[in-house]
View 1 (cartoon, rainbow, N blue to C red):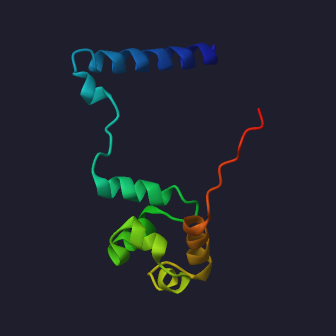
View 2: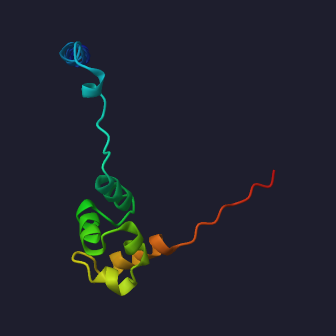
Length: 106
């Protein structure tokens, strides 16, 4: 009996939510995209495992561009607030590794 009420509650919530958006324009319902360059840079930097949003903001304030962050030395990165030697080393390694395309042997 308890499982039935739970399913009913979910269905009711879904139905009420649907009614709330019935006459709304599609762009209100759709996820907002982050169109500005700064947000995209922060998003790109935070895709690196050890970098959070605060770190990304710190890096962009210190260096200005992604190109300058990538060109920074290990010592320059570790001087940023919140960056110790380990985090700076991980970031430096990711930004300076070479990308090699594997050829298919088809």
